[in-house]
Image: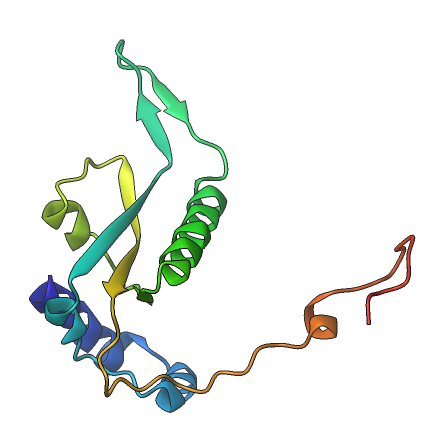
Length: 148
């Protein structure tokens, strides 16, 4: 897993990422090296299924697979945090190699790799500030005044 993920990451950092993107990543201290992929006790491969085939071979589309998968991941991350575990979402791009590693069929697409476990005593967590409520909400047309 680590070797394949780092191969994609090296390609990203050296060829695909724009300077603007690399500058945005700089404060996070991230790079192509992903030792946590060998250290963490649990790696959860999350896949979305855009369609499936029934027993007669007919293709059936699934609606809102990215939204559903994202919501499910949020719930899983919350549950893991409530259980006292730390998580890290890892999304090397492209992630097609994950289908082979996790032996998933072609109608599934890797969504993210969720790394879980207890954090190392010397781990560094970047100081990322959250947006304030009024940066992502609006009271236009609201029936009640906003909460203070």
